[in-house]
Image (cartoon, rainbow, N blue to C red; front, side, top):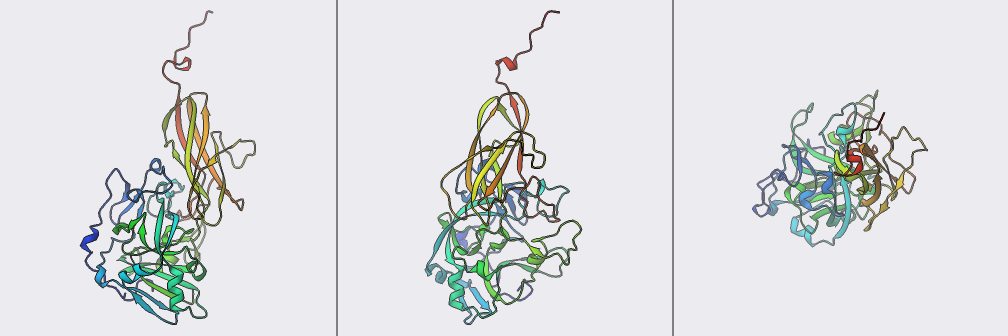
Length: 394
């Protein structure tokens, strides 16, 4: 189940019609790891509600597999009454659903963690929002018939490779609880932003688990297995768990699941040079279990939760959707030249607020500290503040 057993589908030559999987061009994404490909988007490019596919981050654990459509089959088995397989054309004929959902890599913002954490060195751009179209996973599970005692659904991809400290090859697999699998918005996505999935995004079929970190949205999906016990696969028990300082990594198995409340500034960029006067700061905010109700911005030093620091309330923009980020904007004025730090925090309908500093963990997962960016403010050329002071008598 975790990749150690044989798969129903071999990894075969790719379908020529889908093209090849290569690194993105330099004007699309910033490559973080070239092989297997991991690439993120510059924050300033997240300037639309739907992230264009060329700008959508890529997370790979192994080299992308090449799947031959004529021989492709998706297997549904395990603790079910009626195991079955589906070809790609059969999947395309099933009733579908469209969901707009934000996806964030569990390791996003890892480079902002101190001490440094283990894992792919993401900055803040391992996220995006897409319009996903596909078959609800619940429909396939209903067709299979869940047996009494079924607790988790394991999603397995076609990608395989080696991990440090693990003997032999393994495949990528992740599990979700049955109730999450039965959510009508949990999809077997066939399309992304109105087109067939691209190879780097999981063609021909990927899972999309809205509200959870991206590690659950398994790409190149080949098997859906229902189990009656906690999944013990490598990725569920090793990389995507919280290991805090002092924890025993062998016994600390709290899994990463739901997206944390978080916001990011998409304009201006870090170290931007601004003129004195008024500006409009922009960004995005999201969470996995609630609705973002408030986004606040400040340029004053924050020490803990000092209540005297004023926060300006941002305007939340349309459109809105259950699983998607909300864009926001907030006017700020800089009256004096100098170095300034802009900070943002989001709050959801349960009152959950971003922490000043997220609790440190060994893998740097689910980091949602307040986003802070430094900017330089200068007076416009020719303004009084830009002229040398006149000498005074005496």
